[in-house]
Length: 423
Ligand code: URA
Image 1: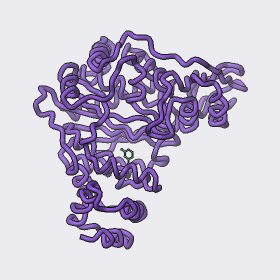
Image 2: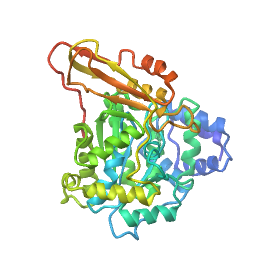
Image 3: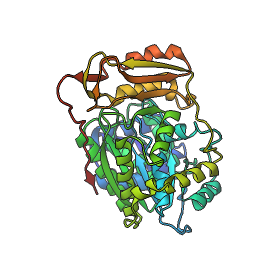
């Protein structure tokens, strides 16, 4: 098999054969295809696409380069959620214990933040003692004991994706729907969950800025999951405005605890419950009401067990940033816009996120929002509080927030929320 023939075929918009894909992916993973050749092919795929058969075969080949986890020994059905990433997206924190409290097992392999989007593991690591890195045996142990586990994916899961994603990251080839879909779904299918709910974010703070592309990504991932025997549905949810009132690490854990205690911001509660219902339906547990498990404290009980089982202290004080700066409203009126991307970049510049994979994050850093679009505000009232351990970062965060919000004298305008279901 000649890799140059494969590159030229895709350059000329021809379909790749099953044999070509089956050879290419393991050969690349084993180092027998040069990075520059894979890079050329990724660019040809970004420009000319892949059809459903090609994406499915590509995904299968990526899965085949690693292990497949098997949860069939558990006495509960497995169900999982994947978000394509956004600003203030702390949903996994209340969601995993909530769905476990409803009777399902939630094996949630999560990632770290990169750029302006936060990562679930960075948020959880602000809990003193909590460990993201678990062996496979430990992961099964926590899942069996508590019903939910949130941890880092081991190296054995779809190693082809690890290599290819790193290459795409530095060659301008991330934004290809077939490559994103196969990357996400190869890991989720290899993880072995029985059901999967995809939260595909759309808006300024998301990967997908427009609804049509988000829908195409959702449909591609749903068909990949379905083709591989995973009951998969997708929700398209708004990411023009940050989720909830916090974007950072420890401050998002605090907000998640409010949700688990039966309170919290309405948008976070609404999305947590919507995703929980879909996850439970996928697991065949649609008779259980997740709202009741939040209200009666059972979801909080699972959270506490889950944190403890991963070495964390659920009663420990969460880190607080050393310095705060308050930004106020210049006029009275209605807040009509608060841009997710700009808030995410500000949180990142304050130290909540990282520019390179190996950078550390500040547990206490981030942005607390005091108003959301639709709220009435008064001149001089706090709009945002910036948190950081390193006050020299305030200037860069303020620059990122230039023009991030709008206050209008007119009637409240509802924030746009696009939410459709695709399966
Ligand atoms: N997340 C992934 O895991 N892969 C992509 O390609 C994009 C986002």
